[in-house]
Length: 492
Image (cartoon, rainbow, N blue to C red; front, top):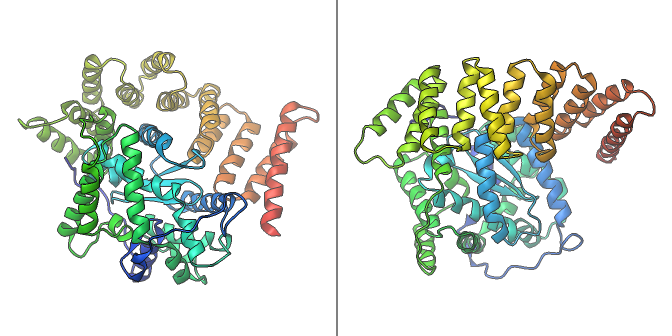
């Protein structure tokens, strides 16, 4: 089921297209480089041309650029689902570190990427195009395989260059030109050796095949179906034929041939065949995003109604959930609440239904009902991200800044790299008239956005408002010292 896309991001001219082609760590060349068969070893934290610490620095800079310029999906339900799938795969991926940074780009185009420093990103459009959880997971497994095999570092060594940090900004710019489809990325790498970076990111066919093979191993070891990978490739090939001159975004950065599709299909058949059922959650989140990218909420309502009336409808609960979300988006809150209550009667305790029902109750200003529903849900699921996130929204809507801040403090401790949570915490602290808390939360947001000068100012203002000798003043002073040290390093 596919709901018509609500929006398309403007595509610039040929230069940005070339940069987009360069951005991915999974580009496969079909030139003479395809004869690469052996890969040199790369040193660890202190060896090789690019160390893991340098990769981490590159990843941090790339994420800063994405936060500044690429629209992201901050929906807690979507983020929590992606997190659960990726960390189901991670134990089977031979990564040196399981600490990943995830980004969900708000675009209906199909795309995914991985960059040094364990940064993995997907477009919202990947949910629209992957018809099963196995297909969706296969793309993530492929990206994890590139990270685990350190293909960026290997390619860099093959290029015999020793300036990985100087190209971090160029990589960030190239990625931005792809994920935002704008001239932001072009400006980010103005005056740099873009062609050299493109060559470094243009991986050989051997790298791509290795990522396919390792990715299928990751899927199988995680209890998922490796056949999802050739199925996903076939969907991409079909899209490529249907779209004519407009190459799907993923294929512009992940060249795909019929031979590669056939190779992955043959490899997948070597694994024992087993019936792997999709998690219901995948199809619920897919329906949620189909509403997001519909041309309008009214069109989404009619589309989901049409699917419910079909005799061959699969995943009826996911369709009904999509209809409830569509009603919520078009302002028909009573219908949304009634449908979500019916779904909860059939599956009591499903978090996605509870959180979405609470969202609808907030829209109806039924804050006590929303709080009661979520508090009970949280008691059964302590620390759950979407429930806690929605509880914070309830308290903010009710004007209870202190309670909202308590919930958001828990979330920022667990998810310190989610910049939008720090902004919401600053809002809650302001509502609670905790000015020091506002400054501290704003400082953490500014750090993630790469504005260390602004973070320094915020922390100094917080420090000035605290009495000498206060324990919190010491904490603020230590954080200020860390930020100042990073600023000095940047300036030196």
